[in-house]
Amino acid sequence: MLNTELIKPSWASKIGLDSEGLWVEFEQLGKIRRVYLPQSGDEFRYDRVGLFTDLIIKGITQRCRWIPPGIFCMGSPTSEKERRDNEIQHQVTLSQGFWLADTACTQALWKAVTGDNPAFFKENENNPVEQVSWDDVQKFLKLLNNLIPELGARLPTEAQWEYACRAGTTTPFSFGETITTEQVNYDGNVPYTDGKKGGCREKTVAVKSLPANPWGLHEMHGNVWEWCADWYDDFSVFPVVDPTGSDTGSSRVLRGGSWSNHGWRTRSANRGWYSPVNRDNYIGFRFVAGQA
Image (cartoon, rainbow, N blue to C red):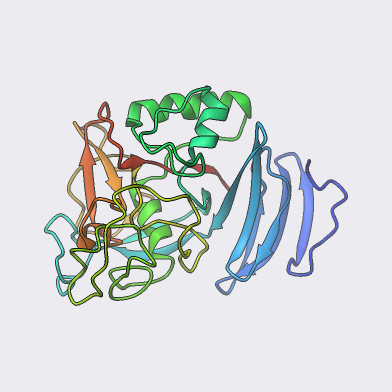
C-alpha cells in the first residue's frame, strides 16, 4: 500500500501526495530531485546507492531503482580494447529519470504474469526468463500493464540501458577495466584483454547472485542479453537528447552479453541485435516501470 501517512524519511527533504501520486524530494548527484512512486509501489526507500521501491506483482517482488537524469558519453572511445566500429562515442542527454528493474525479469515473475515458463534453464525460478523474443516481451508488458493500470512498464531505450549499466563509470565495465567470473556470468575461458581467466558456467545463474553495479543494478554484464526498445541502427556522431533509435528496422537492440559470450561482448558499450521474433536461451530482458 502507498505510504499515505506521509511520514518523511530522514534522507528526504520533502514528501507529499498530489493528483499524480506520492512523491518525495531528495538530493542526488548534487541536485534536488522530485520523484513519483510508480503504481503498485510499496513505498520509497533509500540505501547507500540511491532510491528504490518494490513492486509486488501477484506475490512476486521486483525491486526498481531510481535512475536520475543526466548526461553521459554513449559508445566507446577509440582507445578501448576490443571495441567495434558500431560503438561511435557521442554525448547523450537523458532529460528524465526513470525506474529500472534492478534485475532481469525472473521466471517467477514471467510465470506470475503469463501463467507459463518458456525458459530452458528451469532449475531455479529466480533465474532470468530466457527464450523470449522481443515480440513475446511486448505481450508480457501488455499483460503486466493490464494487471497494474498506469504502471507504464516498457523496455528501456538503448541509451537508458547503457547509461544505467555504466552507472557513472567510463571504463569498459562498471567494475573497471576488466572483469572476473566472480563478478560476471560469461565464458571466462576467453577473458577481456589481460583479465583473469576463469571457467564457463554454461548456464544462467539466479538474479542477484553476482555483485551489483554502483547504482545497485545486478547482472547488467553477462548472464542474459537484454532486449531494448530500439530498432538497431548506426549511432549519431552528434550530441542527442532522449534518443529512441530509428523508426524502422529489421533487428532490435540487445545489450549486456550473456553466459555464453567472451569477455569483450559483455562491455558496457557492446551492441548486439536480433530479429524481434527470435528466441534463445541466452536472451532475456529487464523493464522500465515509469518516468518522473
